[in-house]
Image 1 (cartoon, rainbow, N blue to C red):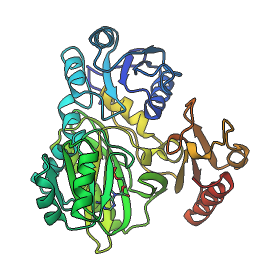
Image 2: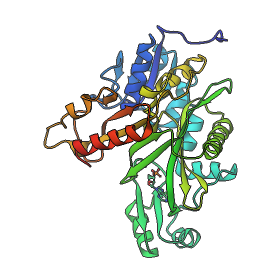
Image 3: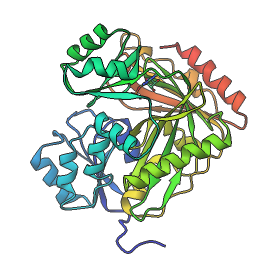
Image 4: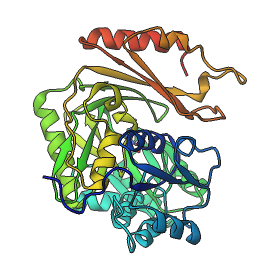
Amino acid sequence: MIAPDVILPNATLGILGGGQLGRMFVVAARTMGYHVTVLDPDPHSPAAQLANRHICADYADQSALDKLAATCAAITTEFENVPATALEYLAKFLPVKPSGAVVAIIQDRIREKNFLQSNGFKTARFALIENPQQVATAVQHTGLPALLKLSRFGYDGKGQKMVHTLREAQQAYHDFGAQPAVLEELVAIKMEISIIIVRSADGSMAAYPPSENVHRNGILDIGIVPARISSVLAEVATQVARSIADMLQYCGVMAVEFFLTQAGELLVNEIAPRPHNSGHYTLDACTTSQFEQQVRSLCGLPLGEVAVCQPSVMVNILGDLWHEKNMPDWTKVLRHPHVKLHLYGKQEARAGRKMGHYTCVGENMKDVLTLALKIQNELGKH
Ligand code: AMP
């Protein structure tokens, strides 16, 4: 049933953040007949290139927020580090999904860990550090080596440091500007997986099957779907993601990242309040992409089908592959009929910067994976 307050095509949707996730949201929304306004301070942001309108301003800029409120029917975000206060301000005037209150929890590692722990979700052992005196007790709690992670503004392994001694932990805390941080035990990881889940305001949910994620230098390198895990484990992970979404009263698309330990335990690593890199395969291997789901949940439409039509392997393309100003030879990707290339329109290639990805789909996972790795080798490894 379609609710009476549903937002239908021809309305304008606003998004805070203009990165590649925003760009893919813009494509999905415009394909469905919506108009999109992007708020992002970067004049060349990937999403703004394709949006109907770009408000080039800071996320906290009052007049920019007022413009969005006056011209949009609903607001979403593609970036967890937008000020939660901006989302809360916009929510006085129009629907905002996810809410500022939820984003405020997820964007702060300390609040996120406390939420997970107090609701009984298993995580890696951790300790909070809010002053220099707490470093030693934190080390005692987690053991060594351990990972020091800044509570705010970390992503793709940034704001993280592996420490092997108390001295290193103290030094790392100092080098990070003595900002609030979390010390986490180093987990013996067997596999990393993630679940993309979408939840509507009425509580209905749809969860994609787990993606098996291979990271390199703290950045996602390859996503394999379906993950090569048992159906029991996939069900457990899905139930955890559902419970998290329910407890947060979440609205929109969310990713839950997990560690599967060598001992067979499933630990929640972190939550992302937005579509996720490990869900890009949904663009090419599923009936409904994670970005269409973001539009659907934002507009109050029924959620789309999440079944995976074919096995897929997604490979990230980082700026490391650019030599001087020369792009990689894309014919190495484009010559394959079952491989889909996605480039994000970023002007400057930097080491570690996500410039694009490709997804291989096919009937047989072994063949798909072999082809994905062959292309990666031909393009040159990061
Ligand atoms: P994060 O930004 O916290 O997701 O960390 C980025 C990547 O670093 C993860 O995907 C893991 O590959 C690795 N990592 C993070 N935390 C831990 C941990 N406690 N133990 C082992 N590896 C970790």
